[in-house]
Length: 136
Image 1 (cartoon, rainbow, N blue to C red):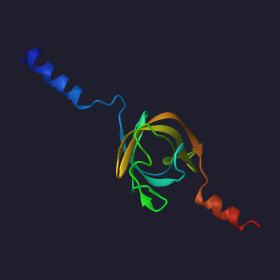
Image 2 (image 1 turned 30 degrees about the vertical axis):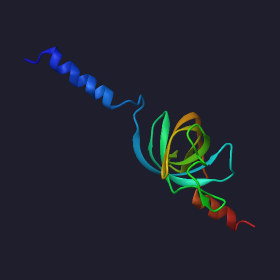
Image 3 (image 1 turned 180 degrees about the horizontal axis):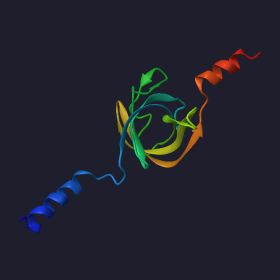
Image 4 (image 1 turned 90 degrees about the horizontal axis):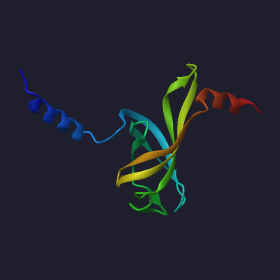
């Protein structure tokens, strides 16, 4: 029979190991982003994990005026982003997760941000864009 003293420390260690309050889902989704202030540019990358509270985005270093700068998107910056969502509305309409988030961690090839605001929006499908481009 195990004593409670031996079980409790293991449970506490498990709790300490995961500090996030929201479960992160491992995904690999296209994302476009731009800062809401500072230099004007847009970037693209992959959302590699998403939770109801935030996202981790992997991208190439941002190039602004032909100079790679690690300070273009810094900690505390507000970023607007659009993430291609994997599920379809009614099984046929593409969705995107549109969000405004605050950067909480930045590295050369990735940044983590917490959502300040987010909503799902419908996105144009490639077939819809192709059919509309044929109409003159």
